[in-house]
Length: 233
Image (cartoon, rainbow, N blue to C red; front, side):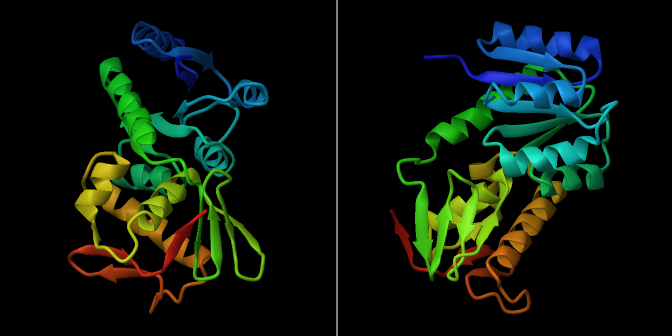
């Protein structure tokens, strides 16, 4: 079996070397880039399993790149950044990152986070990648919703993880603790706010009334319930 490929995008040579050494020792394949243009060019010919992305890039806004990756790539996205404010972490997760690691960090932590993310991906049932509900079709492998009128609505990798969680457990309460356990990431205010934003965006894409959503219901103090009848095809 081919080892998972991790791409490292950071303009600091020492961080690239440190991460590359730690990941190689842990059995991963790696590619390292100092500039976003080099990284994006490589994506035309390679498909990474995980992208480590620094936000402070010399030639591109890191958050814009994260958002593009979330929409167009099936890779897990982990931000590595010196920006430690809660709002920075929330923004990164809102734009589609799967995890956020603050510099300085121990390379062993990065390796552990990557393994946890890949493990969750393997554990999730992937035999069925298309679900139908209430006239909608969710193509999880293509990151695409098809509306009842045929309109195509793209969603991010991070939004897709939440959507799959709902579709696999319709009409059952999903608590925030269960979401944190299933989706990974550190529990706390930033995770809760990021989940709120992802769910809000899913509701918007599903044409929900934000004051009275029909499909994704909030059970205050408990969690969420997806009320649609789901058929996997």
